[in-house]
Every structure is written in structure tokens, then in C-alpha cells.
Length: 93
Image 1 (cartoon, rainbow, N blue to C red):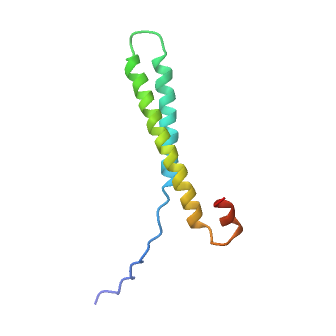
Image 2: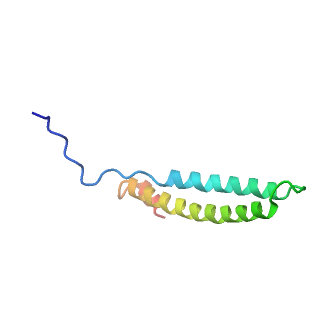
């Protein structure tokens, strides 16, 4: 006879999204800065216009990820602090 398995939780703990989105934003900002520097180098070897456009697109993506990271960070902080505690009051100000 097979052993009884544990019952599944109704609400499994949520995986934090804030750290992932923060790293995406940081990586995109870094890559955009690198592409922008490479597009300013003299010479005909690098595709300057394409690097500049890629940097602009990465800045848009990084800004979007930054707003999403801030929103999820505030939400996760509010959900993980006990209601009525001083930390909860401070997090929700």
C-alpha cells in the first residue's frame, strides 16, 4: 500500500518577484550604458546607429522593469509584515 501523501496547501507561499525584476532592471541599465559608450566610439567597425537604438530600447525596458520592481517590492513588503505592527505601519506610509 502506498504511503499517504501530504495534502496540498490551499495557498502556497508566493515566490518573491521583486528580486528578479530588480536584477532585470539593473542588467538592462548596465547594458544600455555599455551600448551607448560603444556607439560613441570613433571608427567604422561598430554599427553605431544600431547600438544607439538598442541602448534606447534597453532604457525603456529597464525603466518598465524598475517600475514593476518597485510596485512588487512595496506589495511584497506589505504582505509579509504582520498587520498592526510598527513595521507594517511604516511600510504602508
